[in-house]
Structure formats: C-alpha cells, structure tokens
Amino acid sequence: MKQKVKSIDLGLIDYKEAWDYQEKIFDGIVQTKVNNRTLPILEQIPTNNYLIFCEHPHVYTLGKSGHESNLLVNEQQLKEKSATYYKINRGGDITYHGPGQVVGYPILDLDNFFTDIHKYLRYLEEMVILTLAEYGIDAGRSTGETGVWIDAENPQKARKICAMGVRASRWVTMHGFALNVNADLNYFGNIIPCGIVDKAVTSMDKELGQKVDEQEVKKKLEKHFADLFNCTII
Image (tube, rainbow, N blue to C red; front, side, top):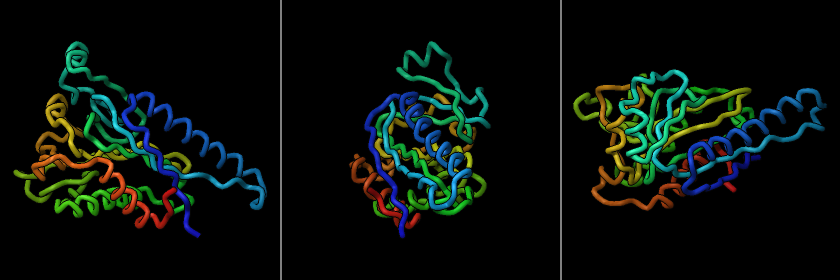
C-alpha cells in the first residue's frame, strides 16, 4: 500500500513563521515515533508525511556548516534591501530565499520509505531535474555538491538553479529545496551562495527568457515526487 503525503501550500510566508510551522510538525512526528517504541505493534500510531510548498520575503539563511563571512552585507544593508537573516538548523552553508522562488519542505518519516539520507537527497534532486526537463532545461548534478546545476561539467558555464539543505532526526526530515523560478538573482550578489565562490546562479525564467507559472511548476514537482517516492499526494 502506497504511503500518503499531504501537500500543503502556505503561499508567501515569513521565513521564521514557516520554520516554526515545520518544527511543530517535525516535533510531533518524532514524538509519535518515540511513543510508539513503548507500544505493541498493533497499538502503534502511523506517522504522517508532508510536502510543504511556500515562498518567502527576501531572506538569507545560514546552515550549521556555514560561515558567516559568506554573508557580504551588514545589518544596515540588509534593512535597506528589505531582507532578513537567520542562522538555522539545516545542513549546508548560506543561501537566499525570496519571491519568485518555489521552496519545498518535505517533512517525511523515512521509516515509511527508506532509511538512507544520501538516497533521499538524490531523489529530491531527481524530482527537480525531471521537472526542469519538462521545460526543456537540461539540468543535472555537480560532483560533490548538493543541489541541481546546469552545465555543471563546465567550470566557466556552471550555474546552480536549485539549492538544497536538510535536517534529519530519527529518520524524520525537514527543510528541503529552493528552486529559482522567477527569482530576482541580484540578491544572490550579497552572499557567496552555499559557500561556493566560482559558480553562478540562475533561474528558470532566465534560462527560458520568459516568466514561468509557479503553480504549474509545483504540480510537476508533486508528480515527480509521487513517482520517485512511490506515494500518493493528497
């Protein structure tokens, strides 16, 4: 029987508000798993799975393995750019979120799917790669670097179109991916994205030369997510 994954679209939401929302769901799933350990199998409560979409006002987030020096603006300059900044509990370095970006936060109990974080990240990348292919964008992976890239094998042309950073505890995931659809790429100029100094960033609208329907992109991401994780989106 296929696992069910509940899809929720929060729309435009403050980063901290969305982070708190994630934490509440995440903590609830973890607590259910802890409680289940003391119960007979027939009394255990099934854990739920979620795929949360949203969009954030301009914000920079720094992961646990990141360096604050990769933020190239000070507090006053952040205010002038109407941007906020948070240190957060995902993996990875610094990244930018903003309007025109499709952000996805899968909160999954991987015990319902497979217990392999490496495989989980590759599936998220594949979901984005397959979605981009539907728009005629040939994207792939960059060796040793998480996320989705275009022309990754060519150092002069390599550009990142989707960043990823996740957290997992007791095989429950949170945080996720940020796909640049119609994003203002100028904001990436205020950071060293993901701590990588020699590669550019891009977006779907830049690659295609026209604006892209973000709701359509989400539907395609959902479809490929469901296929890869062998689940039903509800």
